[in-house]
Amino acid sequence: MKLSKAMGRLGTETAFEVLARARALEAQGKEIVHLEIGEPDFDTPSNIVEAAGTALYEGYTHYSPSAGIPELREAIAECTSETRGVEVRSEQVVVTPGAKPIMFFAILALVEEGDEVLYPNPGFPIYESMINFVGAKPVPLALQEERDFRFDVSQLKDKVSPRSKMIIINSPQNPTGGVLTRADLEEVARVAEEHDLMVLTDEVYDRIIYEGEHVSFLSLPGVQDRTILLNGFSKTYAMTGWRLGYGVMPEELAVHITRLMTNSNSCTATFTQWAGVEALRGPQDASYEMVEEFRRRRDVIVPGLNAIEGIRCQNPKGAFYVFPNIEGTGMNEVEFADYLMVEAGVAVLAGTSFGEYGKGFVRMSYANSVEKIEKALGNIEAALAKR
Image (cartoon, helix red, strand yellow):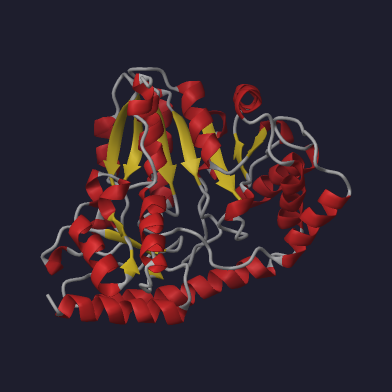
């Protein structure tokens, strides 16, 4: 079979590959502590599940409009307006099966072959994958440990060229847990305006923040006409398997993103959209409690890692990941991850799974119980002591 050249440029998510390897080891009887997958280990709140069940019994099992049911688009517009402090209309909202399609569709709709897209590195691997897929050039913005995993704004200015078409930002960030400051975002806005660039702002972890308040790029003055806000329900409401996400964008672009939905998925499952309405308009207590539990776990894993010889780890300000530097162990990131899987029974991801600037780091998700995190820390320390 001869595949297209574009398929040869398409990447993947290593997290799922490592998860499969860990499951295979478990099937052989080995106990594995899972710190590789970025998925809340909580159940979806019961009110959301009940809303989906009610929708199913009421017959919401048929096609819906490609852009989403009006009720969910309106709920998203209201929530975004309230949290971002700007007016958002439902016509600017496109609902998708998960948040990834917004990355996919935005790049397909706006980026031509030969264009350049600036993106965070280390960063969510699908950014680079999609840029490559459309034949554009990925231009990495290095997230620097010494800057709390924020990129240097002078680097941003230096890397913009006449071929630049889009800037992708992510805050709070996967995989580092870093958070961009208002000053960082304002500089992005200045560069985008000066060079007439679109900005794709991935704010999937906007509710999972531990210090201060989330600053949304969309909330900055004068950026609404060049901004695509990507968000979803997976992380905030523990709904990863529901596949429910959305984009907020200029109405003119929403029409074209909707056409891409029509051509690819037809629509997002109708009953899950009604669950989304309940998620946004119903009680938020479970979500807040989940964040507090993530904070408690962060406060276990960070000092625990820093107490292990050869590892240093910054305190993440958001999301549910740590990105420790493991250069002091004498292993590179791939060797370290492989060693932990086999010798410590702990699954983690090599930092280079998220790009070239992840060298010397690994990502660990603390979306696991304190008990399991403490077990992982003990296993890691014991395994490294044997070397």
